[in-house]
Figure 1: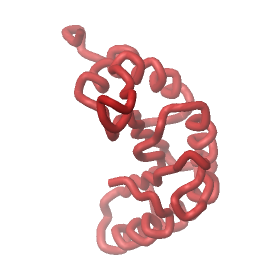
Figure 2: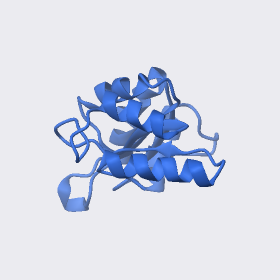
Figure 3: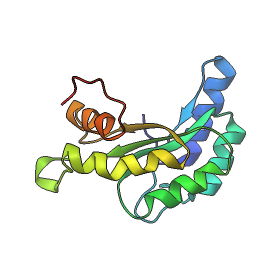
Length: 143
């Protein structure tokens, strides 16, 4: 699940690490200001989540746009594997990205050190299929 408040995500991350050996992928949500809901920029979020025990970091429910590569670059300073779960929109009337648009925006980020690319709000199996095809990772029968 995505967390808009970094302090909550850091507490949950530490709790899960104390109770389990399961790996934790921590995905804060960054708003239009480039910070979490409680004001932490990506670099500070990365360091706090690494200290809390996260095994991997990323951005959850991320809006595709010019700021996204900078957010991911900030998160990379923790030295942990990166993941990105981008959104395609909220509802048909709010200008969702088509599967092809979604794939065209995300595929270039695969060469920037992000290990996992996925989707969140507004993303359908068609969006993921288009991304797999764009990355050349889809089975031959995917159209």
